[in-house]
Length: 264
Ligand SMILES: [Zn+2]
Image (cartoon, rainbow, N blue to C red; front, side, top):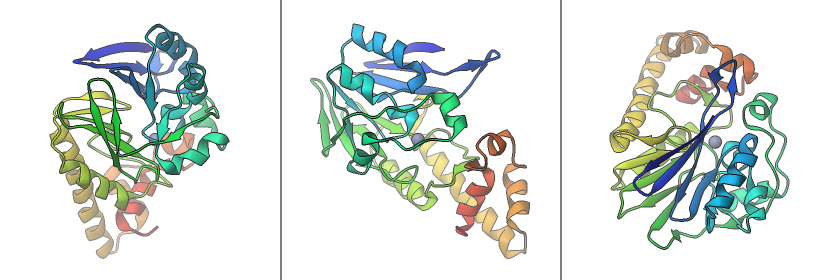
């Protein structure tokens, strides 16, 4: 699946593998005034290259180094673009470390390539994006804020209002801090690298933070009443499911509840 959506001046390319007519997880690449914001998964490299060859971008930025956002750095280098990234991401691109099989299956294998350190502002002909460091999902995560237009490109910080799973190496404390920082900005539209444009972006982002805080209160109350991790996880989020199995525990409800309880 490879679909183009245009909202105002933002083109959103939505892509996902389809297995037995079921869509796997969607990733998005945005094109705004000749700037690429995230460049999709390696599985779609050929289609992206032909799309971007027809509409040549001038610049690119990755919200973070994960393969579904930055795995096509080689393709951008071939188009004479050196993408901007947070300085914590620079080392990753000289030799991306191996990723688990389920991620290779969904996204493909990330390429090595050249990137450059981003500054505080990224300008295009028409727009000026403020670069907001937003660690938590990863240490190299940034969001892009265009104040005049009220746009916020959130990478993987938003993704959905109701968190169910967490990656083992995500930092929930920093995710909450980053969400708080963003909620103070004056934006109206969210562009999420998995959902695309999000309706009621500002309210959705606040509801996400509220949801995490209310789960955290409930988890701690249950813990104080003597419940163990498994019982709390099942009560708040249901039993572990296929995601736990497929990811071999890398992406799980238990990791989320552990983080809520601050036990890890
Ligand atoms: Zn990510």
